[in-house]
Amino acid sequence: MKKIDNTFFLSSILFFFGIYIAYVRGSNFSDGDSYSVINAFLSLLNENEYNPSRGAYGHPVPEFLIGFLAYNFGTRISNVFCFIIFFISIIFFYKTFLKNNHNNINLFIILVLSNSYLFLENTNSIDYPIALFFLSLGFYFLKNQKYLFAYIFFGITIASRANFLTFIYPSLFIYFLHELKNKKVKNFLISSFVITIVGFFFYYPLFNLHNFTLDFLNIPFIKDNNNSVGWYGGPSLEFSSLFPRFIYKVYLIIGIFSIFLIFIYLKELLKKIKFKDIDNIILLFILFINIFIFYFMPTKLLIINPFIIISYIIIFKHLNEKKIYFLIIFNLAQWFVFYDIVEIKYKEKNICLAKKAVDYNFQLSIKKGLMINHLMNNESMTECYSQFMGIYSENFREGKPLKLSE
Image (cartoon, rainbow, N blue to C red; front, side, top):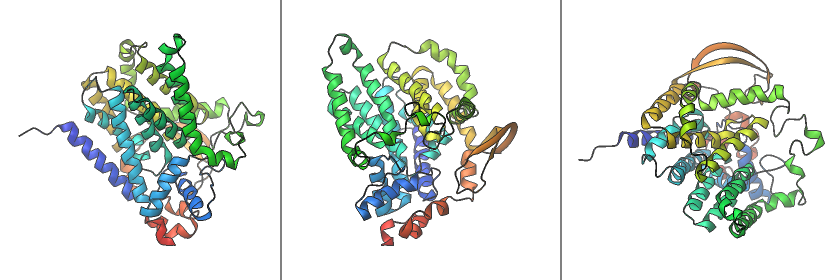
């Protein structure tokens, strides 16, 4: 009788536990944009009019997929869908960048899912895991030289999260750099053209809504009136506002225990990384551009999903299994116990209002771990979001198919 692989057993437990968390949370989203993603679909369905989920802009592919699932099957199922495709994206990232390294896909899955923020945040009905899924497919087909499929999925990625274009076009430039040096631009131009056309196809309703202008982008430093205003709900664009939030949130997603281990591993990683390897150049570029963008909008930790996943790919690629097991243990420790070095004071205590930090001071405190706190926390955001759901409010609160409200 064949011995059961312990890593397969643990990765399976994490997979089914994630489905459980996604299902049970229903409409109690930790991401405040989840309900508006669903409303974008409902608006299109009922009024035949596109109202983007973020007001001025939106991401059409997730709005349709999540909205369709919530309408027909309920938010419990749309949550489960988002977690499953996040899980599948981990597999495709492994098959693209790590297949020839450890030959232990289950260990990589455990490493990623042991990060409590990655695990919990991707059990929401939100666009980030959908964009990651299509991005992983794009890289998988690119690596296997199935170029047309790669370009189509990259285009759908942009239609899922527009900011992912900052990963895609430069990655293609790096991938075709050898050809470009020899003045062979055909493949790069074709890839850029197909991706742009696919992306524009999905964003056509948004451009049409804004009379085919780019005013809705509201990009800082381009518009004169944006140099001190928060970007898409973020803090004001000043060092004193951005830097503390940036450092604190990067520290959180790396892990309050794991960050010390990663600092210990850093010297070995820098020695082992082959900086001329195309895969490594692409990975490092995505890592740094993601963290750079996050500096200017240090709001949701989901924004730096790619940063932490790419970091894990690099770690998994260059360190031995013993070190990876230690990192997993340190990650899992945060599930059960959490220490904080900063006490943050917020302007509003009402859980339904956006949190706006007004002051902080350094103070050590010990709390329940993130997973324990999630399971034991009686506060629910469901009522906060249901007030925006109109006739669908009751079924939205209960996680039932929204179509039952009609």
